[in-house]
Image 1 (cartoon, rainbow, N blue to C red):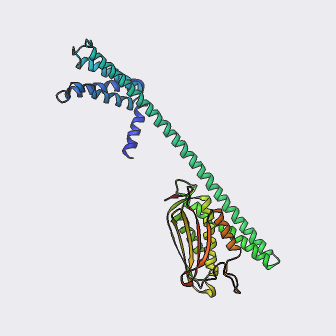
Image 2 (image 1 turned 90 degrees about the vertical axis):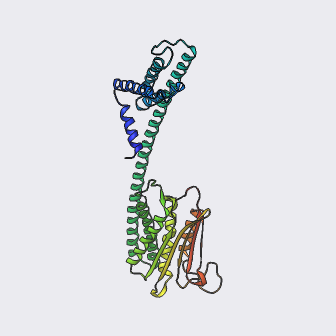
Image 3 (image 1 turned 120 degrees about the vertical axis):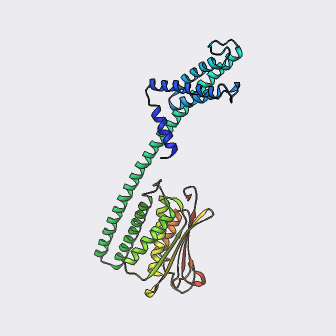
Length: 357
């Protein structure tokens, strides 16, 4: 427990003392200050006679309440009048200037006690509001986690139904379409699973750390493809840490899933091995996701001629473009350096919905 928590706990405890005990402690505090002032007489001059008593008022109002602060003010005024105002050791004040100074001291003491009490109540109200806010955030996090859990279960059920329908389909086109739909549902389930893992320890469950999300999702995809016994392809991921809303993270995850899946399935023909490099970073006012492979490459988009269209220029490319549009960004696919491999890029605005990590 740090010093601040210790002090807060002590003040909270003393303010709960019975009234009699608080007032008795205030009297003892003023008496101690009077004794300390008399010990400091050789050091402190005549004009500093009120200084230590102001500290007593402040301490009494802080530790106890406004009533204790006002009591400390009255007792301090009596102590100063008795010990330091002529005629000394008498409560009678014959000098009007001395009387005016004493009245000003009393007014300042009452104001000081009132201000301290107002600040204490404001702090208490702020602490209550903060506690309520934390409770609301916990409840929201629980609801969000329950929603993600149900979403993953529903998507899992949907994948099973689609695969069953694919087996029962009478045409090859219908089977391929149902399997592709199952793959997309599985991709969405994988993204939600990664979002749930990334937000368990996060303070704000509505945002995601992009480094943990991108690298974690790449790990999930690499394990999934390795488990399927596909060609020996290594996946390397690098990502900067930024805060991104869960809504935009879902779209980012689907783009990443589609791009990596295409690279694993189509970029390395005839069972050859290779590497897929994933990078996520911020460039000025935009985020840039790059998925590059070192396969034999493919025709760039828009190339004319008699050659067949580039692999992935069908439904997968349309899906990527649609997801990029939802992010208010752009999607591009191009050949790698020296014509080796293929590079897929997603660029979208890093606006106020994303906060730098």
